[in-house]
Length: 190
Image (cartoon, rainbow, N blue to C red; front, side, top):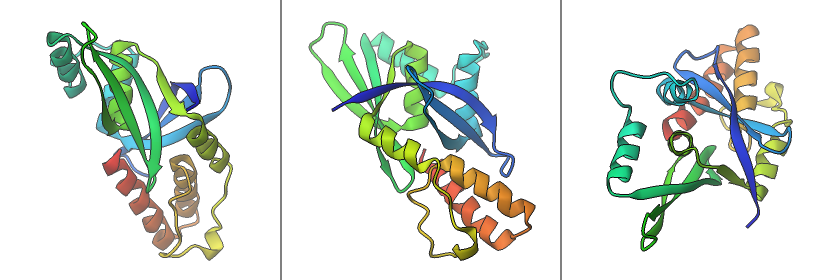
C-alpha cells in the first residue's frame, strides 16, 4: 500500500453554515490538496492545538492522549484509509513502549488528525484514495439537472460547499437545503 503524507493546510469557516468548518489537507511534498467539512467543535480542537492555545481544561483529545501516555501507549501514525458515503475513515496505529502491543483503531478523520497533531506524528492517506479525492475536487455538479435523487457521494466536501454557496447566491433554496443536508450528514459522521 502506497501512502502520501499530508498536513493541515488551513481551517476556515463555512459561510453557508456557522456550525461547520472546512479543513484543507495538503500533501507534504507537493501542492495537491483536498478539503473536508467538519463540525466547529472539531475545528476548534484542531485550531487550538495548531495555534498553541493553552486551554483551562483539557479537551477530549487531550484526555485520550493523557490516558494513553499513562498506560505507556504511543501513537505511531495516522492513515486515512477510506471514504464511505462521503465520510473519511482513518486508522490510528498504536504501540506500547515495550513493543509487545501493536494495534490499530478506526476513527473519524477529525479525531485522528487531532491525535496525530498532539503526538506530532505523521498523517498519511492511501495513495489511491488521495488520487480519487484530488481528481474529484475539480469535478462539477450539474446544478441544472440536480434533484433530490442526485448521488452526491463522489463529490468532496469542498465542491459541495462551493455549490451550496452558489445556490444560496442564486436563491435556489430547495437545492441548497439538499446540499446542506448532505454536508451536515457528513459532518456528523466525521
